[in-house]
Amino acid sequence: MNPYWWLAIAALMAVIELASQGLITVWFVVGAVVAFVAGMLGADLVVQIIVFLVVSLVCLALLRPLIMKHRKIGERHEPTLVGTQALVVEPIDEQAQTGRIETPDHMTWMALSADGSPIESGAQVRVVEQRSIKMVVERI
Image (cartoon, rainbow, N blue to C red; front, top):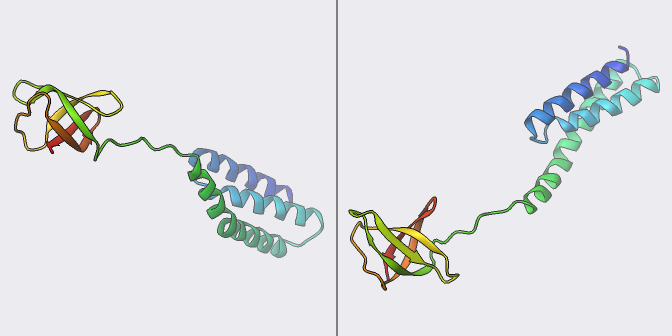
């Protein structure tokens, strides 16, 4: 087999990796490049295939977990208000579709009562659930 086929395989695996971004096929790109080098150095096809498989699988097994760990470090998580105490600043009444709370950071949010009962302005509540931009609260 012509060693340049390994470059074609590497290119194909790179395109697949770009489409999926799962950090799976990128290791086969590395394996194919190393197999290409082995072929250029005169290794026969069986050795090239073994080199391709060993390098690809070793990189997948050893390097992918390290990269995935560092990838998660940069992820941002939206803070949740669940568990936060708040003050009712507009009476919560699901029939009238009204209700706002103010959290300790002075942000106001639309609010619903967890049990559906009305809650008067000035009451202290705790956020028990967040539904998009609405907070579900219960009396403290």
